[in-house]
Amino acid sequence: MPIKNVFACLVHEKPDVIWDMVCNLRYLDPASCVLLYNNSGSAALLDDCRFRSDPHVLIYPETKRHPYPWSHGSMLNCMRWACRDRDLDTITNVDSDQLLLRPGYTERLTQVFAQFPNFGMLQSSPVTLGWPADSATALIPLGFVGGLSGPAVINYPQFTALNELQSWGPFLGKFDRGSGYRYSGLNHFPKWSFWPAVAFSRQAAQATLTLYDSDLYLRALLGRTQIFAAEEVIFPTLLSLLGFDLVRTPFDEKYVRFQTIYSVDTLEESLQLPDCFWMHPVPRDMNDPVRMRLRQHYSNYQQD
Image 1: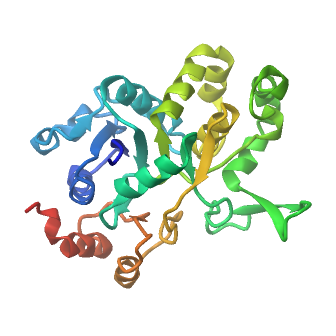
Image 2 (image 1 turned 30 degrees about the vertical axis):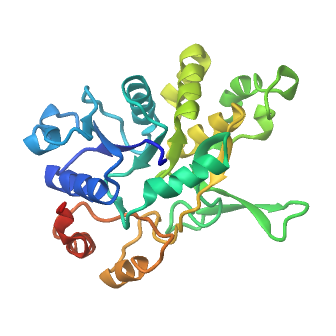
């Protein structure tokens, strides 16, 4: 039977657009719950009664503010609340400018879950999703590595993480094969995965929280880190060190990119690709042509 999934969504503006995203998720994956995390600083953002009319739409009980581009704190809070209060198997991150393209997401994720019993998180391609898209430093060549047919590269967030290697060293040094860990910490920093549509197992979320709660030095690191898009580095790195598998996503990532503009024709093409489940970014504008066309394609997300 399908796993139980929660979509964790960090939102901060435009209630109508938030509701459009909720309707998109609920229509195309009705078995999943949607957890809204108010990052606006204003409790009024989610006051609209629509957000409280569906028992599958959950609202994180506190209004928090996590400045861009550091949203690891919000995911830690979502993990803690969801694992404590919900019966779930996976948590999927959905950015506020991200939309689901077709039904069947949870069923496909269930197959991954069954295939990889040590599943920690879905990991995006290490090469195709460079940061920033308009910069020559999107992918940083590291030279040729034995056994590889091309140059090894890291993404921009990984590059900024290396600037903090000295600070992270004492923490990473605790992870050593001689101490029973799967990897040596210093040899596996920094891992990376693009943030939209990343998914975690419940076991991985709980293990991350246990590590975070028990390690004062780690909490201090996360409190002052300047890693760009730190969540894209922190979670895959910690889960890898804890011995979980980072499973390459089975979903087509063609339309999950950074600062990309899509056309309606591109959307029509994506709807013909059976492995393409997500589009990111879609402007947070109810009149955006792509958002409007997807809504129209699915009859305004009206349930039968």
